[in-house]
Amino acid sequence: MRTLNLSATAQVTLDASGIGTAFTGPGSFLEVWSDLTVSVRCSTNVKEALCSVFTGASTDPGSYACGTTWGSTGDSSTNLGIVRQGGNVFAVWTGGDAGAKATLSITGTKVVT
Picture 1 (cartoon, rainbow, N blue to C red):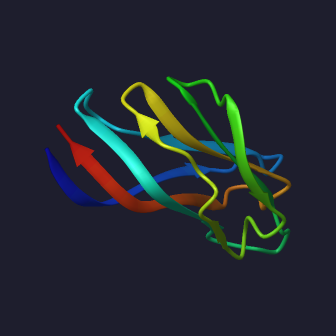
Picture 2 (cartoon, rainbow, N blue to C red):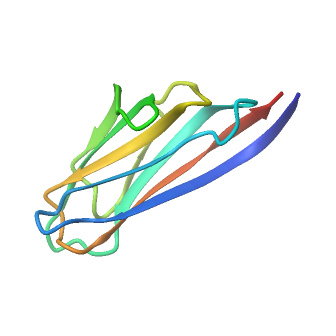
């Protein structure tokens, strides 16, 4: 078993309504992500987006982890559980600037067995 530093990102371009979802998760059934810190931000912040973060299986945001009213200018949280293969961390932005690039960044620990 190896314990490695985790650094992962996912991006999405917000649609005409300022809505978008970015997600990422373990790429192998041998990986487990833990001790996670998640950060969110957008490339512009004329309208300050709300952002909710979830963990869930495949492409289905299942369990609410945290949220912020600072989804455009940036915010972070450590309120996430363990994510295993088949699971993802999702960031869902609403009310942001149309066409803005929204970024989900995750740091923590990746255990590979």
